[in-house]
Length: 188
Image 1 (tube, helix red, strand yellow):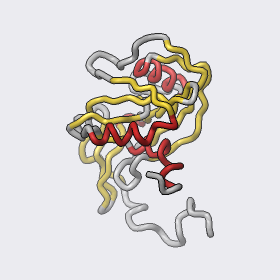
Image 2 (image 1 turned 120 degrees about the vertical axis):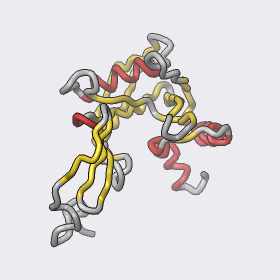
Image 3 (image 1 turned 90 degrees about the vertical axis):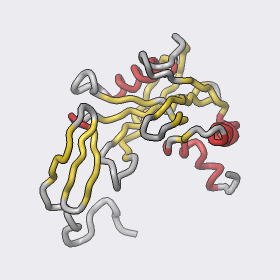
């Protein structure tokens, strides 16, 4: 099995063509490179996604997402550098965790950079593990976000996600990492 991170010999189609900005908004940029159309965050903004655990429980949030037209169950997350250019990933993750969930992390660990949907989005996110949590406030996000916070035992995560789905709630793809063991074992 070869190294899959390096391109195969020869240039991939469209890889060497110029990138064209089709539309630019405050947070999103639509781009085209040859036959490919894709979206990226404006101003090189990235995201921090927080895997926050406490005493065998995981913190999840639910909030309305306009593109889905419904609420979505997610890991806490937020933008890095949307207000302060050059913001540190872990600083942003700590700020977003406290803002969304009301918990402060005593320890934040960078687990690496990942890509949400690389065939359509150029956006990357830093996955951050948060531990040594202390409740400092109600959470709920900033004005107008109306975030609901859940503290769910990991042993009950599959049933919780299934119940939220049955209610019509969307489920962010990153929640899959919490279900992976059960999926691989054929339990889900």
